[in-house]
Image (cartoon, rainbow, N blue to C red):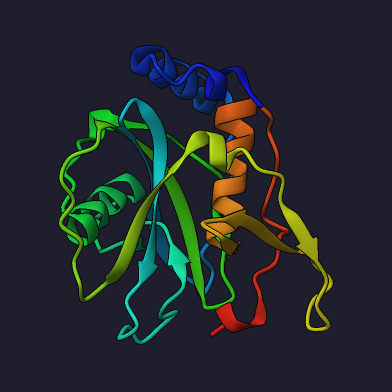
Length: 209
């Protein structure tokens, strides 16, 4: 485990360390080409002195990726940049407000099989507010402690791709890419100060559509 995971009781120090590690990280942008831009919020909040990241489960009524685990996020609207989109989606999905000054940094873009380039934006929330999940988008939400997020991934092979599929054992299940790829890189960069690439980590076939 990282020193940060061992010392989560000091939020000022936690924020400083994470911001410094993200500042040193050379995040990679992926050209859109014929894909659409999207952004997700890796939102750091604290409950009972324990710092963690919100993971949502998408509503069963959504047209795409229904019921899958996700981070708050969605398409980048015209005129927005990735941080603006991530903050807007965080408010729309969970009712949580944050400002540009709360953005600590970003991670590598991740291109999805469904035609998006996702930019992960790390946002500091601090003490967790009362959530107001939007039932049209969110079926459930969990604050996963950083100690739980500091987990070794699993990699499996599928016939449809020569890239390894990443799986994270979290929430008594397996989380897959793109969420797993983003969370794995966040763990590597923010908790261990390791510049680990995830662009070549594959999604399971059920997430390709």
